[in-house]
Image (cartoon, rainbow, N blue to C red; front, side):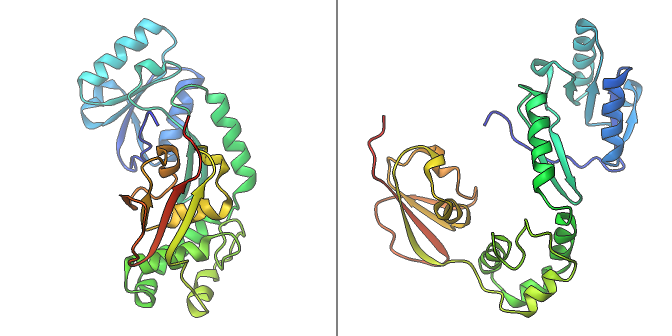
Length: 259
């Protein structure tokens, strides 16, 4: 991963957009869609982000340098080497946003991936997110511990769960889940034995365990490409044995010879 994906809040904030023509207008529409206000370079001291959509390469580079010297993070259309950040292709299920980026390598690839996701992701994802936000206090009462809440929610949102994210849940789904038999996800120690260093060889069950684990206990030979499939905040322990503990613990062994 060569860049850190972030969601930048620009609602009611000024964003510099320089340039004319279709590319510049597209950036202005994007800024306004996110609630920002487009301004020129004369108001750069009020902004933290700047977009440069100027055809002439030298002029675009000079404009980017000027904005950067004023403390702005800058995106220059079609010139990744001049960019402090790139603009992803966006799937909008407000407030759920899925961003697909290629680090400027191929906008076409990002677009096609977005179109695929548009066909897959249900329109009701935003409604589900809003319902979960409204139910935060009810969930805290049901499951006082943060880890306990997370495991219960993992189980509900997973495939076949009460709030399966691909099922296009209606507006009352969260209330029905809380009022019903809302069980938590798996706990205890679960073992995974790797057959190769390729993450694609993980079974669906193994991938789900990694994505939900509170603690990862792993052999020294387990490659980073496997470990990054776990939650970023999961505790990592290098070792051969899991002695138990609270939550979901995944022990990863390797049964292959690294090449």
